[in-house]
Image (cartoon, rainbow, N blue to C red; front, side, top):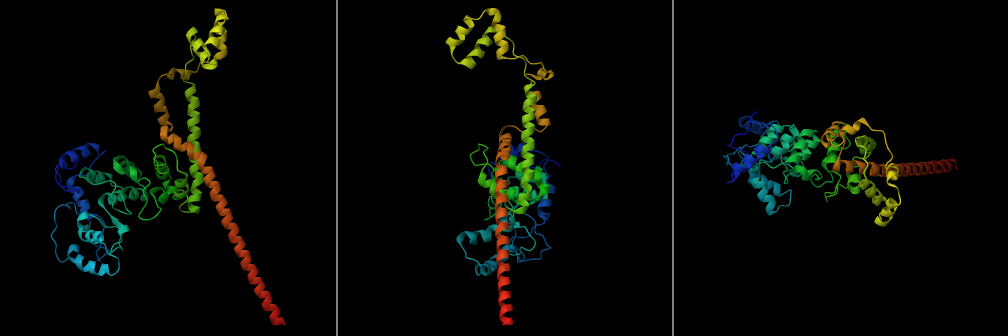
Amino acid sequence: MKAASAGGGVGGGTSNEPELKRRRLLDAGGPIEDDETARRKMRDAEVYERGVDGDFRVYAGFDPNPSIPRKINKGHPLYRRPVQLFHWSGRRSLSLYSIIYFLVSPFLIIQSAVSHDGDAYDSHIIKPMGHFAREGDLPMMRWLYVNGADTRDEEVLFWFPLYSAVRFGTLEVCKWLFAHGAAGDIKRTVADTRYTPLSGIFDESDKRTLSRWLILNGALCKDDDTGELDHDLITKDLTYHGDDSARELPELLMWAREHHQCRSAFGVFLMGTLSILEYSNTKLRHAFLARIRSEKVVDRILRNTPPDQYRLLWDELFPQRVCCSLAALCGKSGILELIGDYVGIMRGREARIIRQLTDLLPGVIAELDAKRAQSNLEADSNDDSDDDNDGSDGSDDFYESDA
């Protein structure tokens, strides 16, 4: 693979396009598909022409040059658009926006995403970035990005890039999208549902690594950038699939507790790296001030204590401990950070999220258990009442027949 050449692309020409392309080329974050292969992949993409009733086995692909007007003939979807619009208007209410969108959509490189979608629903459209996110094709996504493509596709209702990557379980693609402009989509709802990238996969045990990455990157946090978890988001996204989601909650809690305990143990390890505090009269006075908080009292104590007894006061304030070999790492913050990263110690915002999960998840699990128990109780009560009704009807019939 090689860097994309200056010609062509998916974004259309602008006066500052070379500068934008140069910046994005430096920011792409890895190998980029070469121009010729990228264009072939665009044309060969297994997607269907938007809004066209055709053979589902015939793919339309994407146009690698949407800014270049395409020749319109009788076989082209744009030729059939007025006729389709006439039939379409009989089924749906029309607005000026929908008419304009219907006529110009062939030039938006938006296609149908599913084979049965002849006269496509809006929720089925997909753009190249979302399509290649589903494929897990990072070099192709970088080529699109360098050539001006959006990593969010805000006009796409369902298969926007981050959701496509999450649904198909591609963690590296999710990380790349998050770092290249799609971080705002981590809590984005799908179409008109309550569905989010996290709630879509939380019940799938084979995607635990991906769902936990979403959580650590703010999928359950409030919008104020404090890293504080939103209880409503937790109960909505982590219980979306009912019993399937409920089975995953204890696993998530166990994972959070393991990381929290590991961080606490690492804190004990760091205590061993502290050097023994060396004695001095100045340090003794500062230590007294920190505890007593009165200069008069501290000065009186030191004035009435013989100087040869100062060391005894020091030993009372700072009991001597055995020197640990870890003290050799004192002041070596870079080494300690490397050790922490190697053993998987979470820091900063991630550590706060983990701690909050250990505090909040037990309550969420208890709430779910209580609701499930209540539902079972109501179901049993309904069954008993049905049995009583059946029994009374039978006995009445028996007595009536006997009479």
